[in-house]
Image (cartoon, each protein chain N blue to C red):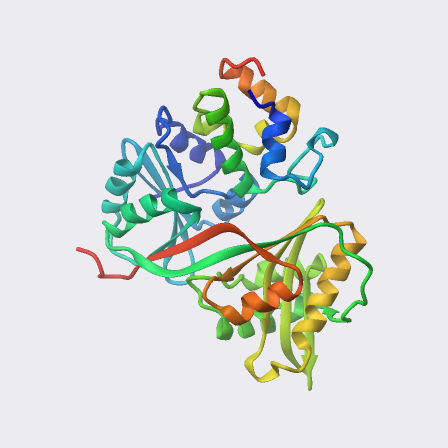
Length: 76
Length: 270
């Protein structure tokens, strides 16, 4: 199973996601990427992230995404 | 339709849409700050059904639709409940998934207005000569809006409000070139971290071929280089071969993302 960093790197290979604490402020992800990321996480982990959870705060860094996955029953 | 007052109200609307299947569909890409700005301006209404919610953003004489729906039939039902009026919707995506969403709109009287494609330039920018375009002053924003109202297809490229453009000018993100005292070209951009978004770049018809666009673009690229931007993005009308060729000249390539703009004119349905 792909790790969160691997999924992010597939979407934006030009950036090192392990070095940022806020992907949006650092310009590494935009709102279109967010929709792609949700879809890729859904597919990779067999979940369906709730619409209310699709806010930048839940995707701004690797720890936030892993916490979101945990809330959806996934151990990343 | 109901006036949307704040972010919390929007969250309640979205929360009411079940997202239990892989068929969930949305074209809402705006982040919280943007939605809050629209709410504050009193420009947002919602139309809710049991399994979908439409966010209707008032523009100049029409509404732009953003949808959040459990699945495509739910989207089609919600679109069928729209009152008379002129509406557009930006459907962004790639391949068959985009076709399916377009079909839901087509079934409710919408037709393709135009298709935009996203172009991206990735990698660091080398030192280059600044094109020496001028950073517009807030007091010049209104003149830029007049130029844009003349040049833009308002359904495909929203013309900014004067107040919004004044803020952009204040923050140094609006570049202009004047010829004989008149604004001959403009470029509006946004830099966030290592990403730059070229939002608008237009040269007046009677100033083409005079190097106005080149000066604007080189000034923009120089500003990107100064802050070590790694990724530049823009949207261009897909069948505008001339514009696409110019962007390719500056290192942009299509990245596969399309924005199909659907439109339904007043009285075209029912």
